Image (cartoon, rainbow, N blue to C red; front, side, top):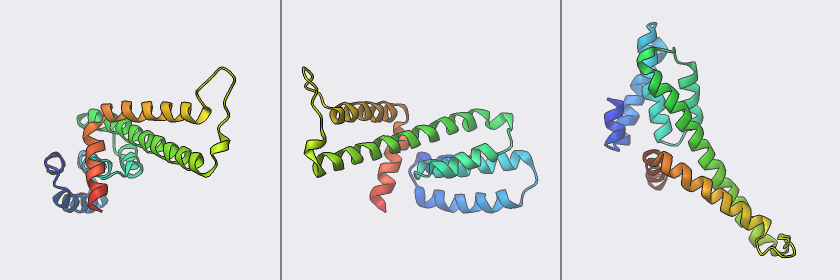
Length: 148
């Protein structure tokens, strides 16, 4: 149910399913059910841009073989989303430094590039590569951010 809501970008319905999963996860004793509810909740958190909550759920979930792929790939996607946020934060920091103190850029003799522009280029490369790896999560997070 959660996956269908997320695929259809029906985050209002996914939020309702997440509340149900959360309650069920807190009360169930069965490892399969715990793994299933944790996976659904983690996928929801990842889609709304909360990779820390997703990671916590996937790392604490019982290691049921049925959910192994979702769990391991989900953990990797959550870390990629964190890396994307770190790249964005780095770019914002560099942009702020550039505007606040243009003389902070040191030009090396024979080198037209500056340390800041090198860092910008590298962070933009990271950002582009991550967006290509997890486009559905990036798009969903952007849509969720615009809605709120």
